Length: 208
Image (tube, rainbow, N blue to C red; front, side, top):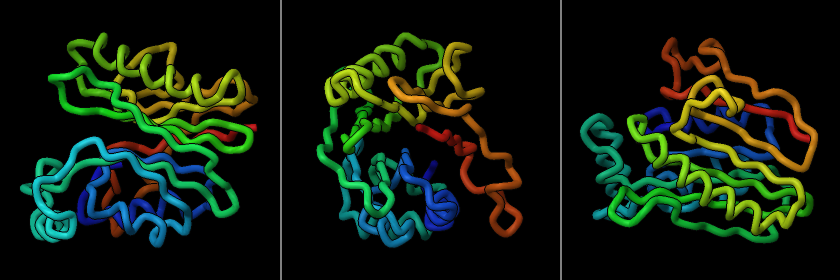
């Protein structure tokens, strides 16, 4: 879910039906302190790209001109949002991109009965081996936390593969627990004042 002047509306819409867990990617750093209030959930974040300016200033600049001031000024992060009552037992972040490439991270939270991971892999459609290697590192993080138990990896894989559940590049992969099919939000579900929020259609899945 990308950044921009409608970020609050995106988060409010995605959390409106009270999900247990919500995974977000490509967030500007200025928004991280506001996610709890916007969603009514508990946000755990992982910074992928730091900002050369104070976070508050990045927010002002982006709201002034969201096309001009993007992640190079605002920074970039991912976040896992948890419903009230879900207690994070452990939260860990690892870098999944190789040195010399744009920094990409995966972070994961261990709950009482499941591990949830959130990832944003590199955009390398001409070289799919790059995101595949990053996703392997992300899976290694999830496996180490889950120790064979229920686990989920969700996010922007930047990978189209018939063996992955999503029809595009956003996926939710589940192991060790029963789950339903992956559902993609239609454009009509993410309208705001006649405009479609986000250039990625949210995906969701019922687990357990």
